[in-house]
Length: 425
Image (cartoon, rainbow, N blue to C red; front, side, top):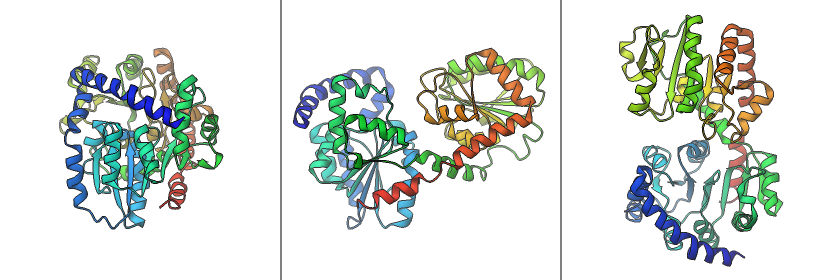
């Protein structure tokens, strides 16, 4: 069956995908950037590999983008600290690649080549990995088959599998069964994920529940965040701070009317809005929604701060640190396509709010179940929930403690993962 899927993928799927990419790059700047970034991929890879000690073992980590790479960092940093090895990091997306070029714990940082049989084989022959680690879900068939042919052990880390995933539908199930069976090990986030992977008729010994490195990473970063000084000291003394993290317009349509009303009653309220995409148009649209006494100021202009109650973040990469200042946080994406990371605010021991589109996050569902998080469905619920939490300090503290305990109780995945992969190299 594997031979059939190899032929189907390379004869049918890859040619169609190439045409789609060629057309899509005309209209999509992100795709265009990815295509351009790969133009001299192998030439750059040869140069970068020439500068490292090839006597050391080579561990290759692949992540789709920044979010998945954040999950890899606790593993990479521990491996580098405890072993004399080379680390190569690859990305599929331009955002992950461009934002990680200065990452100090990687010896080589590259784009993943487009998944043709020739490119996959050449990439593996150049890199000569002793172990390949794929983060979460971004796996590519030709790379998998070529790694298997080369007798290189390879694993998925932080693996998740939903019960009703399309990967289990009809012919797709046979295809993914073929891929997953090739892996040396699949290290899952939970026992429920193990159970869902077993639906592909995998050997049970390939699967193990070890937890999620996101817990380790957010806890690690929260300790570092306390040392960073994004705002002047004592700026928020006596204030109630509400952070809206990684918001889309669909989130803001629900929250901003609630905030406008809340500002009339909560005289000490400060709202920090962190757009998911802080474009000029998006920021100006936010500014236009607040008038009169509820003035806004951009983060880049905080040296001129004069008691504005709405702070709009016009930079990226500081959200987790911003949650440090919050008394309550809202996590965006949950009125659009799916919620962003709820662990980032939860680690600071504050109540977490989000919208109804949260099925993509096990952590969000668990926080709802144990009472640390609150789901809001409309403007009225947003206002009522915020007013109640700001007025009832005991309730706010209780919910915050539930969130912090949830994170603390789930730390430790990195140790378990390192124990498993150490047996493979």
